[in-house]
Image (cartoon, rainbow, N blue to C red; front, side):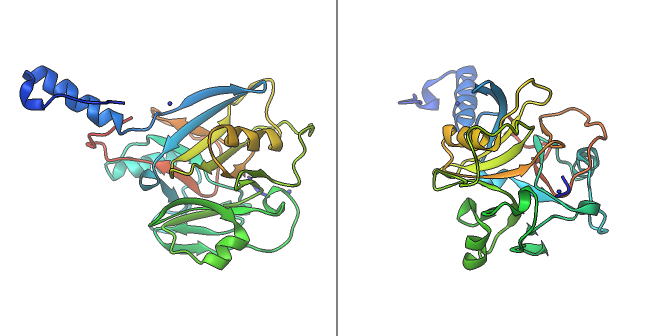
Length: 264
């Protein structure tokens, strides 16, 4: 918003009748897939999570004419026109008036908005803030200053803040007894490279404070995690037609081709 869950051995397919061969092929194929949306209760708050492989994830901001997508519904229409379906979609970070990212935005290897190391007020500027990025080595969450030093060749990157976790340590400004229990979304990365997106379930009686949100990502096996945004945040998994609703800046999505054999 504007800143203020093993196959030990398997028989040879040639030893099986056709229908069992097909079933085995489907089993092996599905074993390589990550689980889709999970609903997890922790500390009186319900979280929704989605796990993804870095290669599946894309970042969107503007179309070819330079007009921002803004709404999930508009991006979904665009992806359908390319023969793709939305498997996952989530807003991707704090932004300014007009949907301009508050900091770094890299899409398809191009820097569309620069890294912001300036001081300021609000969540984005609660240092350390950070960058979620994907390069040839995989997915990462680092501090903004680390990103500036590394200068990675990122395929995609989005800057937001505050940083929730770095090397398993919770942001020093977070307090366990904070009364700021609000709707939130974020992204974390496990040591094996799995990306974990999380959002508090919308409309529940008790949301998480930032310390609890960081602890949740740590409980999901993520030593590094980044806060993305707050009250306006939304996440959809395998949606039907998405209705026009909130306006966002950049948007994270997983959108395989409609004819793709691997659908979750």
